[in-house]
Length: 272
Image (tube, rainbow, N blue to C red; front, side, top):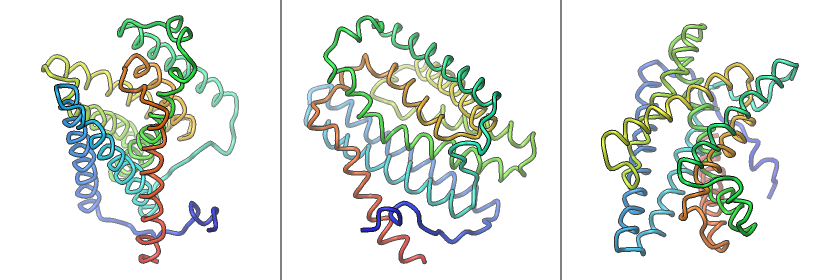
């Protein structure tokens, strides 16, 4: 197997109509929402008397992450020829200042989110190393999907849909953040009251705006991915379900690998 060709492959580009772009974006969002809704429903059931529902929920969740969040988002971004800058060609002083400020904001928000759940970094360092790194492995596929879906597909896609001007870019940042925030209504295993839902949407929308601004100004999906991974480590480290047995750590990556191979060698090959 040619490893380079596994990830570096051509996709025939098209110039979709606005109607087609809107319809496609809506369908992708609905697919993402309902996969998360179904998985979170199984998580809720597993916490209320049926622990056996946990594994099917994990499998469904990672199938959604791999298919919708990674494969579909990446494929459409390539097909529509959307901008997906991993790093800017020139990384000057402004890039580094902005990145440090962005990272500091992420750490500040993360530490506060951890404290709101009754845990501090001092508590974390007292835990075994396996416990500390478990969320890192669990979150990996999700953070890749977040980056590709929201900032590699929706943000540049909405900007292109609106004409690509500066005003369109600002509006695209806001709209991407809003639809990112609203999708969190799928977290029915956690959000059981209207105030909790509204608070979650507000917080995640604000975070989405911050990430959108960074991606547009710094032109770096790679840094956005790493910072998102970091902030979510802070948020989910206090959550017990993010500390599974190391035996289960490869689950998400295994599902992603299978989905990617099916996409790469069955779907893409047929389209060429």
